[in-house]
Length: 325
Length: 243
Image 1 (cartoon, rainbow over the protein chains, first blue to last red):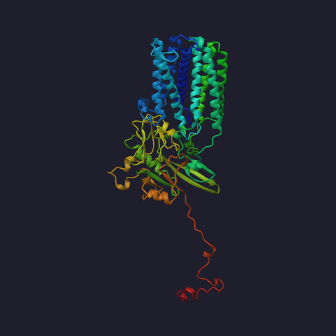
Image 2: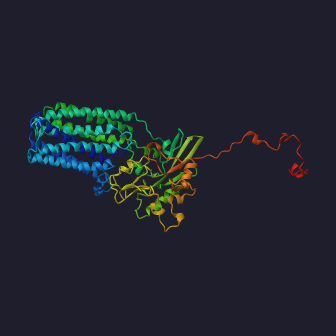
């Protein structure tokens, strides 16, 4: 497939935004159970939510560049019963709303006790909004990944690993960003967040390696024989029927040499996993520069990872477009 | 239920592209808007087509065969492109099974084209929406036309009658009979899309002659060539007998 930068930025930016929100609420939950010190709510939760919201809005804005008619984007909420894309279109703004209200509640110090948990733990609006946001964040990960994973003839994508990796890679970049952000606003949480970022990054390495391993061993289901229905071991296309390009030759081919693909793969394997891991572990004591570098390197790596994700997918329609002469 | 479809006979398609050009001509002139071309007279022309004719070579020289292969939307009975559409712009008509795009609802996200294993959909760069074969839905029901003209433009244009059009759910229709009796098959059956369009395979006309058929059945004594040939001015056997 041809990697579209609008979709690359959409999926990586909202992934980081979701991960950052999950990191904020994870820290809040630990703090509620007195497992972590209580950070400055204004700075950490309030501004952190704002940062997550900015990433989500950036992703949403990028997605509009993918559309032929962005002014009709509102129509895309219609078919949520059948279309994962439609579901994403509904869940993304809902999640953004939850993050906004969550951040606002923290910003306004709105902490009336709504109920008390059996252990005597007070539940305030930020906890309720946080749980709602937590559910929506995971729902959004699933919707985004299922857009790709549900296409059964794109075998590179049609796997539970696609969903797992979207969750892990989004989570890793979000927690790394949360660690870098905490270095400035809540230094007492840096170790906790950087530790989780490192763990999720390692899990992401496992998940992505598993999908690379799987994809390298895929056998195409469709062949030229099934595509045109002729039983013969040797069939070659002499012409695709036109000499200029068409949508089919632009949208479904990445058009790069194999060497570029291999280079991008090794770049992202380095930039998403070991390099940020090193930076996270060395910045665990609160070195904000190292942690910020960890996020920048990991995000750049994720752009390459997403590019590779699209480029590697081999669409069966390509069987019909192999020769110009 | 009705399922309109094309049946394309690969045995008689000569690859002349008449269906390609007549499709473009009809569908670029309709009320649904033009099928845009970019840079049509330049070095790298491109544009939207609903129908393409491709050519494949089967076998190895000298035992090769050239197969011309017209390719358009197959109007699948279980179209994977329809449920993925987020707006409902892509739909399959209940009454005749045609898969259509509502150009006024399409947001141009291209997701349906990803979901089509055949590459049947093309994004129109001018109108910024996804387009595909409509089976000339604006022709086949047009009562202002003669009944014989109420067929898709490609079918009308084909000089070898390689394209049949009809209802494949009606067992007595010409297309159903062709599929049933001439070995019609769907493309990429492995994805379970149940394409409505079918293709008829190449067929070779062969006659098998056995050795005994090379000998005259009315020559039981095998005396041919054993008697001297009559001279040119003598009567032949045909002249003296009435068989």
